Picture 1 (cartoon, rainbow, N blue to C red):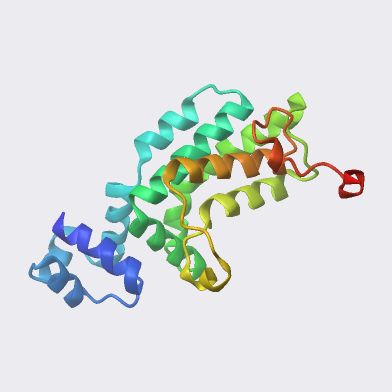
Picture 2: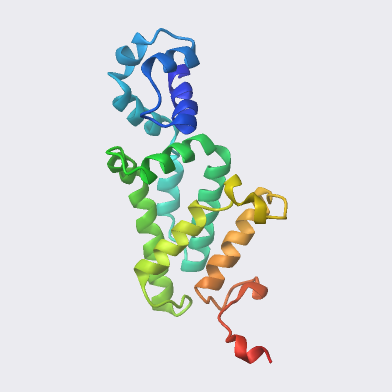
Length: 203
């Protein structure tokens, strides 16, 4: 566990390729040879990291829940945001691998695909029932996923940001509000975020 926790910290800070087995030993205060002894090397260590810390049981429960499209989307957004806040290092590890297009993306995809399929099914069912309105299912999914997973967390934008980082509940509320507004959902309880009106009508 010490090696796994050390790997999560180092992979998040300096990437998988930038982390040596020796550094893992120093960070975990263990003999570097134990990485091979327990995990058969860094690649298997990476897989063990996801196996240990990715909330797979929570994902399965969320996916299995027979929820209506709007309620389901709210649940999925809430669980994703909670996971991001509770384990930012693992989130950064995942984002690093995806962004750098490494071979480890395939292993990550195995964990994320059920979540993606759940979101797509909710979007499709919502459109079928007339509660979501969008042109392309692929575009709706990609914009929604991007908005949830790449929310405000990078200091790069600090020069143009003026508000304090919201707490978990406000962040979830904002995410849900924007998602429902983007999907032009009539049940959106944040009417000020409903951007489906023509700006010309404001006059």
